[in-house]
Image (cartoon, rainbow, N blue to C red; front, side, top):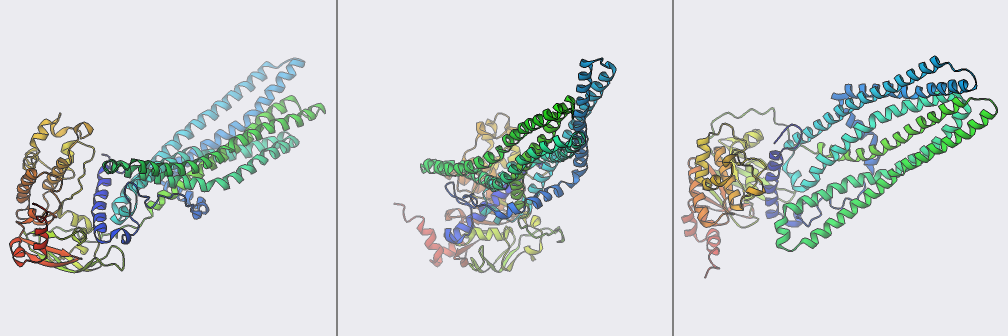
Length: 640
């Protein structure tokens, strides 16, 4: 339930709940051909389904993208710089240690041929031990500093995504797989974090070790230095070629991982539908296709990157051979001592090992570049306009709602609501009815500013909702949707949700009104029972919880979108009584297909093709014998 470092259950659910209502309206109004790039069901391919397209621009922008990551982490540059300094210091100590080891070798060799200066040897051993110990301490400190910096950066990045979701329009959640979005928050951010932790200091210390080892080798014996370095750079050139070939596969792997996660999320959330239609083979086939694509990209990426270490290992061994042969020739000619060859054995290792580390770090940066590109794609998504300059609404809401010549289209050029005009007075219970695709749910979208109107305006107590902050508009309404939602938490947390200051007496009254008192008594810990598989609720009970949640919120306006669709007839009567109490004195909008549930509405708006075609009470509309009467009577035509 934390809101600090991860996307919270409440934020994800709020986004999904809004996305469901928007998606429902789109499907009602536009159909599959007109709705544009939306998510598809458990068998669908979604926007990232293919996952095979390689974004060449991502490859070209690898440097700038990683530069943007470092700018994002600027709060922790101090830690990173200190870590780099520690890493450099450790590298310097590591580089000079072979010189002392070479001197120890020469001193021992001289002692074998004659007298040995044990004090001198002892001093060299102590100095070498202190140098190696200092290198260990510096490397340990830099590791701790980098862990702190990278994990804090990951935390900041997840927080930024969490806050970004709150500012994004619900249209984004209509067209984007939730699994792909979560993959960006988890897999991509973790990939980025691991790369920063392991690679930044490795590259810096590797460069210092390269330079230092080269200087020490040339200072000691230039001919052996040239031969060893030439052998090393042959292998390093091969790794550069491999890097250029493998980047596209790292990009594809991250995209296809998101696509696979999206399919898994859709299939699990729609498991009942999959099983009911015996669609397991199709689900498995789609999974196998996406899994094979991910395997193909991952295999190529890992194979090419995995070649780097064996190549550099071969180069290192080849360097040993070259140095040994050249050194042996020089020893025979009395040009160098045995100690120089011993030192060079270590120098060549210190020279080739950083090359290997840099090559491996570059490989990691390829994956991090692909991951960071996906993260910043999300962070760069268009946001809803900033409304901080709008005044905070503090007047007492009466509930006078007016639709004034409202026009709206989900897709530009395909208008759905055509000049909708209506007026609802305070305290009225308004029913909105009509066939599928009439625009009922779209009105709810517009009323709550899930979407903004193309033209016209919606006014609450004479104030256009477009002039109000979105959070102030949302605070006016309690909403009960056909789609229920429960998050992992106690029963009390699920009912109270974000409403503050709810007393036990209020909670008991609401639970009694919706008929869940007996269910609460049966829970192991009553209201404080964690809702999990062992305490699973039926579809009808979940619907009752969402109604109780709306009653607890006690907002001045109420929206009920098929609020009793998942309950039996007896429970429906009980809920209707509770809703009658809830709607008393409140302006309420009720969307219903079962017209028998809205007979007591003060006024009924009958919609068809985005327009109001009839208005009146239930009795008045039946007496007119028009479209409403046709809809009402059609519910009983099939009953013998």
